[in-house]
Image (cartoon, rainbow, N blue to C red; front, side, top):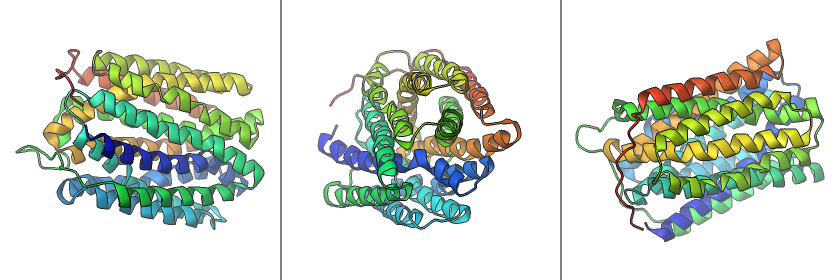
Length: 388
């Protein structure tokens, strides 16, 4: 493992995710203040992923061919521009437009960062290093709402967009100055297509799990802050604290990732996924800050056990089907879930009420766990001891 490259990569990722985390929980509240319906709030959330779906179809394979660094720096540049644009979004249409641009930048950044990490990860250490990566990634996303909540209460929600732009600039400078292009792991003979990872039944199960988890996660990000605001009456600062609670729990992924190199990865995904489903069902039954906080921590804790082994499966398959293509398909599944979930469940919320969003999300997540358990063999993937 090239630890210097790893530190630079996750450092820039932490800064970028911190910026997104500062803004994301308050976008639904901001959209609601502009008079948006639940469906429109879902579109604001989904717009981030819609452009990513198209971009991800080719960006991973192109990075396999032309290198990772240009895509990483280009993605951060677009994220900076989108952050500035959101500052001037005064209606739903412009808010959706700039979220589309933001999604374009993220789709050129996050999956390529994971592919870069896959390039430098030693065989047998997929769970360990992906666990570290996810812990830092979610720590940035988790710490962001805490900072954003205080900024929103002290100044305004629009001020959080400015902070996001500044943080993206810092991440861009760090990437340009300190991150080097590394040798890339590309597809072995006969597996050169972008859809080559779909040949793997293991990958099919992982993608099913990741897509339905994306539906659940996106629905929480879009509608849990709104639930906390409208149903419980929490301030922006308390909502920020609530969303930031995932930070210490998500850091557990640095530990559960190592467990994924020793334990049965399939069991970790299934058990963690099932536990998160149960917690999501209890979310709309909460009536105060502390009960909502307990449920959200339970969801995050369960996903901390399920996500690193799923990532490790994707990296393992990437050694056969191309790391860029495999990680792109992994991200594409998440993007599809993130894009479909808020729109579909937002429509349900307009018809049946806000609470039904969480019950529907639990149903989708359960389907993903069942498909994963069916497609992925019960015997653990053989792993070699990691070096570095």
